[in-house]
Image (tube, rainbow, N blue to C red; front, side):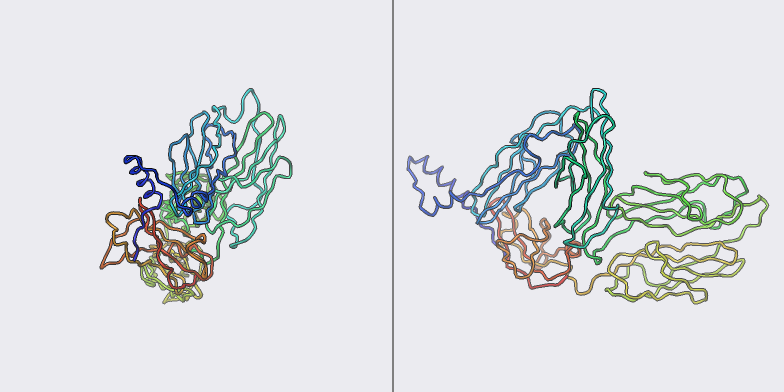
Length: 517
């Protein structure tokens, strides 16, 4: 049961106001004086004081704080205007579309007893837009050489981050290395490299910025890396060729229109490529995803599409075939195919054993084989009815299953997609807690915090935090799905707490029973 406690600082302010009104002098007790002398310490860690950014750049604004009583929250201010609040001992935001000018950045930290401190001001200068340079100066060139796009690292691994940088009419004076728009380190001489350590679990964006001796700059293309165990669920993009139809025939010399649909449940599609017989013909970076094929050689060809998302995950579509020949060529009718198992939306527990089954038929020939796919990857093939495949030791993830039937004339048909989920074994997925007795009047939200087993939850920093909002109360309990938060944890043993947060303060629950990721 949670009960919000009123902050000591708020009560103290009330007493002072009353004393002034009555003309009474209040003397602090030694304990109060000691508490006043132990206010939190807070500093702005990014940007550096006096840092200059070009107009339109994303400016990382970060602060850290410490206090023996614990940090309740950090507030980030730009020219005394509150921009964001973090309920931990670190705070990070990105300032975007900042107009040219000079700004003062400060942070205010509040401790668990209601006392606060304000950081020294940091000056930020945003320069007028010049397109990366001025006076005829050419901007530097810059590219990331390590890590590779989409690279995956284990938790705790050190990530090498290297770039090449040059300037056609001057010299490179500074290269900065950024993770999720936050500056990590910089160098002023070649080789331009650094090492990233203690990177949190998840998908991160890496960029670098190079400046030359004339004040021009260049930002590298975004690159993503994933930090976490292989058990972390990664959602791949989905892509399907919608035109031409499978088994379509075209006369020699005809232009073949190719279209596809592509989507990503946890991000955006950044690239779709079109292939003929595994050779890239063209690509697009935005919808509609389509192209035209010309001068295709006579014969039977396999068409596929590959979609990439903003986290550098990709999926290959199920293949379709087209026949290119004279206008009088006979047309082979494509086969029919349908997945019959597993059922749509089925859920399994890792390591799972799953049987895929399909029915297939052909009106003008015979079925040569049926291929079974998961997320565009071939699992196995069956050449005889009944068509099935036993998929074993399946790891935790979400999967889109399809079956592709090929007839004796080479025509293929792709079945409708069936989505299934494989969950890790014995993984907690729901937070259940009793709300504060004054939930309706004093609670703004509840915050879930996860700690390593054995940690003192009153002073330790959580390894994962999630704002639960104010969930509905049913039969005196609140229930919130936290499976995505738990899945993002590194393997290990943990405990969790829920904290009620309101304008009058915050109160933390007792730790949950131990659970294992």
